[in-house]
Image 1 (cartoon, one colour):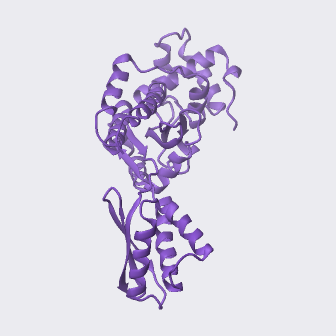
Image 2: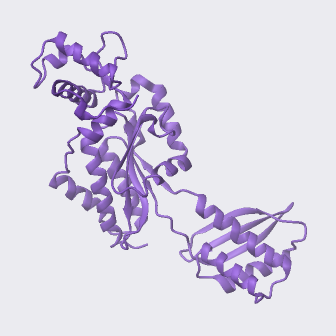
Length: 351
């Protein structure tokens, strides 16, 4: 059923709908007609309110989980509220100052990103997530070491001193001396480049015939660079903090949903892909429930915002995840402000 425009609701229906949504966000519980009759701005009898609630339910905006248990907003209803009725509460001066202070502490960028994830968790009462900028290391050395049984270990040392390794497949003609020649060639000719730059330079040199490598060694160089280039492009770096916030008193009544959510968060590749889908957004994006496949079963919402480097290029995405009853009006502007604060901080931090 398509979501009806807010303008199609009567003033009375709109007011009651808003009270139900806000009551659900505050308590996590269905809101009944008696509660609404005693609430602010509703001068109607419980019977009249029940009639309006039934109308909103028929439109697919509200649902009754149990007979006579009151109503709560559906995913469609939450989307209508967020897009057409929500009045955001901008961060206070004290909140802005606290966020900026935590993100501007001296140190490496990685420390600021860790702080960002923690800040997002603190301000939302949910879990904070930061998709780290894709930063390829520059090569200092790449060594290929025979492991036997048609395999070799490709060890890369970055200029920052970081060391990582990957196992690569070999054909039967690769000797230890060929591995050594390939390693020496990469280190001598391609050091100081990123993996992508190294692969491009190698391709150009081989095509021009300038390379002094034999065929076996050339193949090893290409394989060694390829396994690392592919890995760097596909491996997400995701920081998640505050998972314990998802285990509040209301969540304990629905342990299966929480278990599903925590399982989803363990799949960092999929979480990174979801956040990455907000990379091209002009502003903060909101995913409610099954609007994203990853968290659809757990009935969770994600609020995400891209952040940029000093040149204005999007380098990552940050956000929060929690139950669909997140306080969107407060959290959305907080996430946006945190993204802007991180951008300012990154321009002053070391790599």
